Length: 402
Image (cartoon, rainbow, N blue to C red; front, side, top):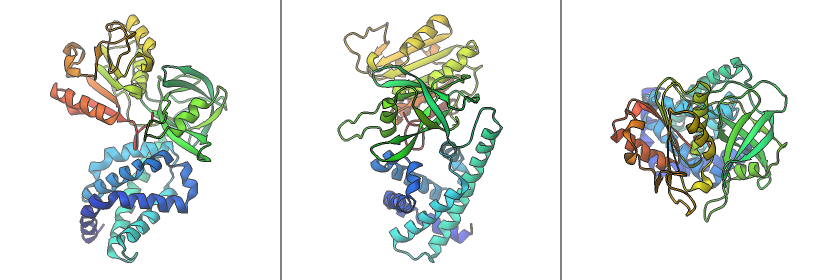
């Protein structure tokens, strides 16, 4: 990019702050209108709620603000690149996005396609697209070199469904071709694609693999998302819950950059709600290694009725003296027993937990709703845990679904 182009892109920052969501909302409508087949790649639930337009507006703004040194965005690029790979996004797809983005800037700002600002954004977008394409190429190559992995979509059947709580069901997925499965990292996710009757479209979603690698199945644990007031129900989650054992779905290869870094270190897992899925996968991986170091497993949910995999964690604690657990129920039922089912009533408060099971030198893994994770991260930093030892995964737009 030329210095003039960089200045032009920086000059659009105030416009993006003010009207970014209007621009990205217009862009998605334009692109999906011109390329209806892409509706089977994009999350139409996030299109419906406006979450996707908000997420893209934030990303475009961050890119414009850091146009002189885009390397600061590399962690975000890597996160999104893994998601793109799980959706089988290919290099030519970036041309479609670029063309529609530039025309959207022109149409929303009422400027000509010959305007120098369009040239500047074309150069900026080209630079960003190359960064994504190269990052994704490396991930695709890694999949090609991994035994049992695959590119694109592969047919799996639901071999078994297990009710984990009132809301969460585990799906055991076996490849229809009977072939090998890869040894993925505990904490990674897959994309699942199903036909949604209400939309008349296939829809993909990302779900964390909820156990360590197995020889003959992948397991996801999915929360049913019922309609609540203004909140729409989950199209894909609810479609999955309605499928019987034996039904076939499309699945992408395990990917993602949130996983257990060092099994030979003290590890602390902190989860909220269905955010426990990657934590159980990581814990199960440590079990296969006979739990080399002490582990702390902290979970927060509403009550015993929605406490998934409770018995599994209880059984592991009985077997492994190195495992410490702590559970907070925000709204325990009368039948929930303090000291047996849970350890604290109300929201999770790390300050009430014995510091012996929250050592500052441990690696911390957080997963759950964004406000929950922000609260726990703040509490950990206040306790003296270095920020670089805190690893987190957000469920939702740009991350993984539940």
